[in-house]
Every structure is written in structure tokens, then in C-alpha cells.
Image (tube, rainbow, N blue to C red):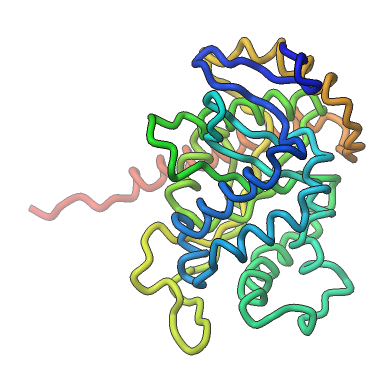
Length: 289
């Protein structure tokens, strides 16, 4: 654990550095996030979101994000490899979209597209999601980083240990990238809560996803990981030190036994999948002779 720069940072065993997003690099991190979303995110591409729009969106909430221990970046020397901006969901820009005071007139036509989609995903599960705080994160990797980028793997394992440190707080994810969805759900062992058909979304008279690859519209939850990767288990000792040195007090409202509840949910989902598979195998008709 290194605190020589006035903030904690962890030198990971693969040579990368995990550190908070401090004021001196906040704009650079916002630019990496904006670059990633405007160039590689299917939903941003579908809506025609620009680099400037994405950067402004991220910077608007930077002070809120900096108060959350999940907000961090991964660096290779002085190069930013990936960024993660986080806050309580209740403090996020999408929380207003599902609040009692929601007013669609406060949004532009373009802004209303993701807002309405998120409402459709969230509102059927509003009561289910009222059991305490969730974190809401904006994760992005640097598309201009030319070396092999293991940051999604790192991100999933760092999340596990920070979640464990904070008594099992879970992440509520609005996923618009199918490729990233599959990877994060596999690594973080989360589950899908709701899904919409992205191919039916219309904006300004046309289907926005036409010609766009890897699109999806899903609401996911992930938390502590029942099977963290062996090669990152050294973080079990370092992450609590890192969180303590950050000196933040996020005051998450978390249900008692949140860790066990989440693990039980994952186990129940896996058992349901297994039962369905067995039933499907039993009911497959035999070929006629």
C-alpha cells in the first residue's frame, strides 16, 4: 500500500496501479470515459452521442463520484487504462427518472430516450429494489490503450473486495453493451433483473439500433462474488487498507446479512437454471423411426 502521493494506491501484481480519481486527473478520466462511450458503446453510437456530450455528463457528477470508494482508475505508468465512476444509485442522474417527482419536461428529446428505457426496466421492480442502497457505476476502458487490457477482470475483482468491505453493497447496472454484459456477468457472477428488446427502440422515426452491433437493454445486479479469482485473492488484505486510507464515509444503507442474501439469491438462480435444463432434456421428443 503506497500513500506517498497523499492518497492510497495499490500496485497490482500484474504491474498496474489502482488509485482514486483525484482532482488532478479527473478531467483526463472523464475524457477516457467519454472516448470509450462515444466510440465503443452501442447505445451511445445508436443515439449519436458525441465525445463532448459524454464528457459533460461525466464531469457534471464528478464531485459526487469522488466521494464514493468504488470510484477509481487503473493506470499503467502515467497512462489511464480504465476508469470507474460510482455513487449511490439514489444520487445518480437516473434516480431522478424513477422518483415520485419525475418530470419529463426537464429532459431534452435525446435525454428522454435512455430515461424512458430505464423507467421501463426499473419501475416493475421498484419495490424489490427498495431494500437499501445500491451503487450505480459508469465503467469504461481506454480504447486508445494499445497493450493487452485486463482491466475488466481487475474491475470485477476489486468490486468484490470493496463490496465485501462495505458489508455486501450491490451494484445496479443499466447495461447497453451485450459484449460487456456477458463479460461482467461472467466475472462478477451477477444476474439479470429485467430486459427490453433494443431492436424496437425508435428515435426520430427510426429504429436506433439498426446496423449497430452488440446492443442490449438490461437491468442487472451484482455484489460479492461466490468464487473470486485465485490470482486476485491477495486483494482481500489490501482493499480494506485502501478503503480505510481513502477516509471516505459513504454511509451505505445496507440490509443485515446482505452478503448471505446475495449469495443465496445466486444459488437459487443457478438451481432454477439446472432444473429447467433437466426438464428440457426430459421433454425433448424422440425422433420418429
